[in-house]
Image (cartoon, rainbow, N blue to C red; front, top):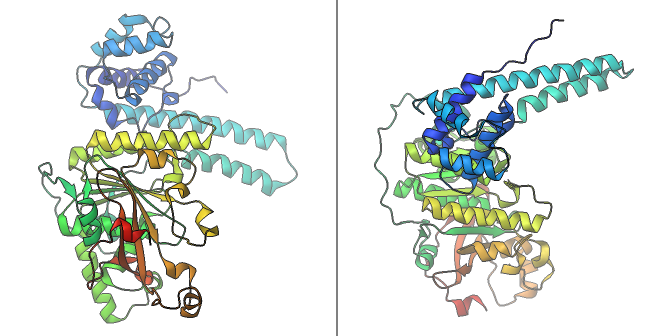
Length: 465
């Protein structure tokens, strides 16, 4: 075989870097797409690493700052000095095509990786392992990792998911440009909670925590629905655990008041089917955007949220859940990693000036207490969650621990069985009171509702009883 250079395009690499030196904010458009290792030229890779380093520290990207960053890394002379940076600017008079340049880099990088994968697969063949199936499995794993190792999924409007999930094609025209929202806060849609918090405030980091099956994800979804449908607030959701189809299924079940199992099995009555279609119509117009990439870093969320905000101002970000967020840096200690992540999320909330709601799990500590109600010390992995959060909400249901009225009566003989009731405990509120409210929870619908008979909040003193 004739030796050939791997596919590459130095012009595209230099044009990409030149675009960043001309307009530092252009990195928001490409940092999710290409990584330093995608550059074929080593010195181009160094320059891009310097740009990413500045971006991660929220510093300006231009010829001067990049030169200083390269010098700090002892790479300035190695890449050609200030003259090379001037050259990069000269080859790219505008940054308008930066995404197209980056896609060329990404495509050729994948081709080089495909060549390497082919060499690895050839090596498996030369080994001539007697177990043919094992060899094929190894070869398939190489190609699978190549295909799925770098996800390019991004925000998808809920209408697109509904269209695909229910196979209902819609041909509505795209909405025109919208003016930035002047909404000072985002209502949760739950009267008692909004009385306590005054809605979700700008730049606040809100933690919704609970043990498994308490309904914390459902509460976050209900908040997203209430804010978007009732107040036209634009909500960006990062779902690291559940697929976008599963989330939308829950939203439709809640909106249509139809059991999620019936929707999943396509076993609805004609009346329920009508309600489902009505729910689809309502949710299709809701400004909810969902990204279900399974592995994400805060910096990727920041970039995607910023790109979405260029198209339509975002009013709130919801992340499910904290434990699946990857750190931007390599940290072996999980406690330190969570601390870094929560600080980064708080910075994201302040930088974008919107509330960021993060779903989190609790440790098992509450399982061993006489009262199973969660406490701030139950927040898993790190006390920094409590420190960095402006608001901490716990979701708690007695019904989870006392499955029958008989079990409840043994320990609470003079109290009514709390069927379908959920306690939302405001355990921390940096700018206001703590306390507790009650909501009704329909488990089969994954739906929280106000209790019409009493929506007044419980005082902090009462919540301690």
